[in-house]
Image 1 (cartoon, rainbow, N blue to C red):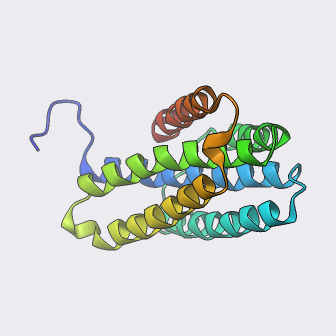
Image 2: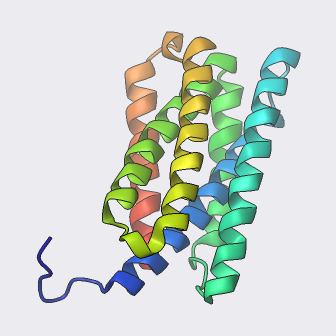
Length: 178
């Protein structure tokens, strides 16, 4: 693909990818923590706990890469701390299916986001590309589990899903840049 004036260098683009992935995994942890504060069903709690553990592993990996490559995290981390928990709590207060609808919406956006990143990474970033693909597959596992748990049966699912997807895309936009 031809570079245009004002395009980011490959190094700048990779730093932005790492910054947003780090923030996204942190946001996911906070969403699940918010859900766990309100979910009562033991089966749902166990499912969400499993997803939260994987998100913690993803975060830890990106946190290590950020430190190794001397990339600063997004300035929005304190906001994602609060907003992620609030989104998780609000979705869980609407019920188990709504909590899983939140997961489906977020993971749908992340799937597209990670696929786009892999397309942009050069061969010199094969290890990062493999990490992103592994995490993308685990995120899609969360998506599929949430569908199986009845996410799409949530009242007003299209509206809830659309709002969460829009918020997720906004978070990606902001975390890349700041």
